[in-house]
Image (tube, rainbow, N blue to C red; front, side, top):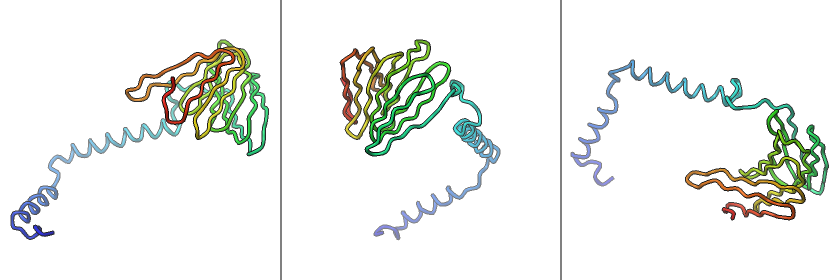
Length: 188
């Protein structure tokens, strides 16, 4: 404010205003750039809305959401024969394709008795990680404190994908083992 009336500042401000308001000399280039941006954004929108199938997307054979209220427990049988016991205040979505079976545990705790099918692994997605089994029994819990996997029988693999410059990691659990991962922390 103190130098706004300075003649040099006023001259520079006027020069910048003239440069900014100058007409576009190459209108064709500007139109081509705008059309390209529209095509790219439109393509993302069409694929994102599911109007065109993504290249690696498998068609879901079944998809079902399950939810228990506070103080409620429920046992459900998935279409592949897997039995899932949902503990209190749990949200789970189960779906399967011809290649894999999935369960997304959003919150709560679920005990899985996975039906054996070595050609279609059973994958529980939880908190950005994957718990992979083919036929076993295990418990997965997720809450604000973090997540845990407790293996009752068989074997499972827990995987965490790479993030930025951090390399992904995994561990294989055996019956009787428990993996606990605090929220927001790396695990060992």
